[in-house]
Length: 343
Ligand SMILES: Cc1ncc(COP(=O)(O)O)c(C=O)c1O
Image 1 (cartoon, rainbow, N blue to C red):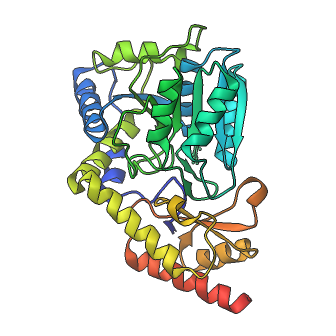
Image 2: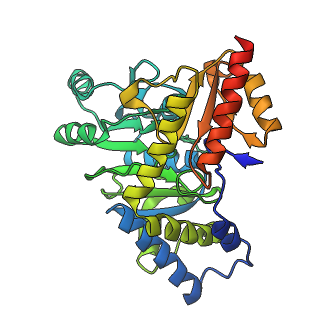
């Protein structure tokens, strides 16, 4: 089977080889050296402080919210799909007061909508937004402008970039980015990754396992306060060599080309409007999602269906990981032949 899913993704061979090892004791110079290499490689992709915490993308988002929001704070959350809703849940779990900007699926609210909302709410502690809404294959390409707006109103920008970083890397400073190892970082699941451009600001206690201040203290000696996801760190090291060896611009470009190939080849309507189309996860409407997915499985490909209220109404094809144009060509042929047959 080949995985053209929103993640975990098809891993390059060298990443699989790197994780297949006895985990060393993490309080050693040997491991600190590997950890330092990974942190430095992460920094060469985006200039902010990377933090690695054992866990999922959801944990990365929870950590981000808990460390920058206090109970009772006003938080604006941009919602255009399932992961926007989960962001709402995360803020509410911290006791934040959510002010939603609900937007049509497949698009993102222009910056002036955010500015108006901040003015309406008044004192805003943070703005939380999903960079790539995985449930609809939609990328919000206004993030850097949101940052300027949030900053000018004294709010922190919290970005869930779980399913796209580092395929689309910001050119400017963004306060806090939450992502994970198993998607565009082409590694196994297990590492929540955050990029901090701003020191944690929460005043109320944060659970120890999620406390960024602790992680930042230990980072000074290339360690983590608790056991790190050791084998995932080895995988990340190999994956980062692969990504940096290609160069971050080329890495973006190959994903864009793969995604464009699907957008122009698949005879189904993408959910995302053109400027918002994702280059990591494509999503197309079809009432025959289950059958298309089953048909592709027979050909050796795993793709995803919809989520939440779109569960059986779309197919999602991920283009991250070790996949070729030959794979994409087969997927397009199978989807189209099936679509033609059924309609
Ligand atoms: C945008 C986004 N945020 C958060 C998550 C949650 O990640 P995880 O499943 O690792 O908890 C995902 C997973 O698909 C995602 O796509």
